[in-house]
Length: 88
Image (cartoon, rainbow, N blue to C red):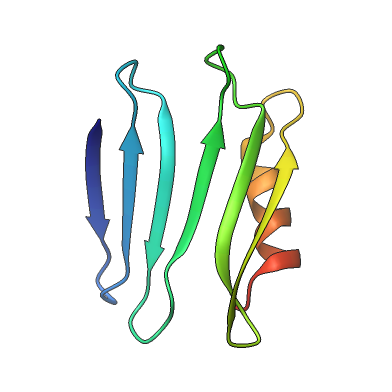
């Protein structure tokens, strides 16, 4: 497994994890004073992302949701999962 992290000027950090084929498997968003948000990518046996699962906090409790990814539209799927599942 490969991993890299990017830290922004405001102290927030995003960690990216990749499999042995260099495909992204997990993103972890960490913000000061907030619970981390994790997004996992399900590729099955292909390099294309078939589904995403988000893990985050809402109303003080941990929640998760999974959605299919259609035609490689990963960014739209990620934004929709975040909007309907997590607190900002």
